[in-house]
Length: 238
Image 1 (tube, helix red, strand yellow):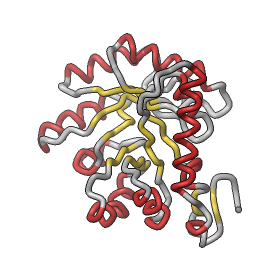
Image 2: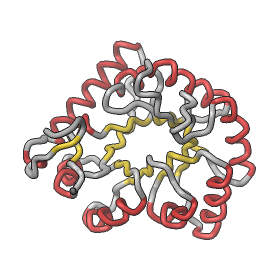
Image 3: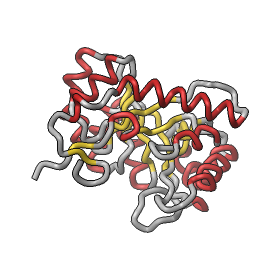
Image 4: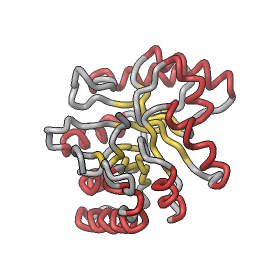
């Protein structure tokens, strides 16, 4: 192991049992729902495969998993076409910031875009969706911690932004958030659920490897799990 969240061992794929991790995660989610008295409704797990190669992703695919999250349009377009030739029912989510010059590719390639967060991007998506006749599911990203360095619409602007997106003809399926790393995530999850409820939105993408059980208890419908499933990300190439 080199630095936190990264792996310097070239044989990392051989020492991570993705199928076993997936089984354990599902069991923990079920236990968390039971503890909270929530119905055992299915919660979608988006396997965050950014920076992971085909070998480790194939472990998840062979275990029957089909929903994956990528941070960058270009990275996804490089590694997923070959995998999709065999696994044609894969569902890809864009979970990283989307620049307007990548909107054409994102609309064509992804099944869901979880990072809709500003008027310029909304307008570009509306134009491209109309042009392509293809509409990925859209989540509005809310910057619940109002962090200057983080993407997302501020909570006090979320309602008006969602209304503006709908006026452009976009269908908003849900909300997404990434709480500040140093904060208790519970208030952020509760805030996201409150915004979703008053806007009639069903889906909540919240909760990652360190807090997915809590997110499930607080209403998440989608969990974005990377290291908890795949283990540490490979070290960047020098």
